[in-house]
Image (tube, rainbow, N blue to C red):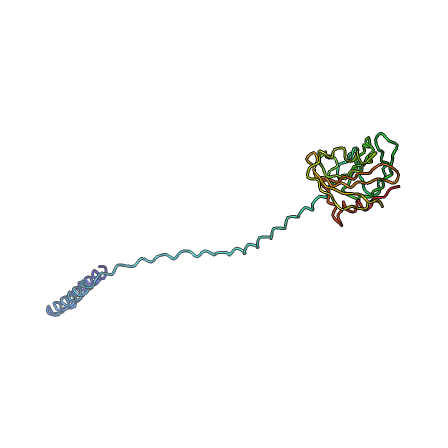
Length: 238
């Protein structure tokens, strides 16, 4: 639109100049017609809307942050070493039987006595401190503070005769005879049976010094090479 206005002003100005210059009417008319033609041509052109420039976004200096350091590897937790097994609680009623044990056995109601020597492993074997019945009781256990009547054991008893050995024979269940076994240089008869809810292996024989020795085993493995077998093989009489 502004361009059209400028052209129209130029035509008018030209007409005025020609009039002043003494141009003929025909010349003025010719210039006017030429100017009008230009106006029509320019009017026919589509108006071009001025384009509004989009202001450029201000550049922002982006300072790259330094790459983060890799996370530190977690240190492995220290594995606590297992605490050493505590020593079994002392029990004065059942002291350790480790090593050589010498006990004088007595046959109740008689003058028969027998000096028994038996060696036990260095650990895990205890004996009864009470000898009121003239016997020796050995217990393989990890806890001597809790020894009960039904716990595994090897018992050495001196009796006045075979009848005392067999005093409770009628109460024995499932009696089976075993091959003889030599213990402390004495050949002894053997049998197994159940009595008062416990299974027993028993070896018994007459002693050269008088009386009969019964060795009763319950809950203890006496197969060759076992600790129980080693204990029986260690027996001597003094």
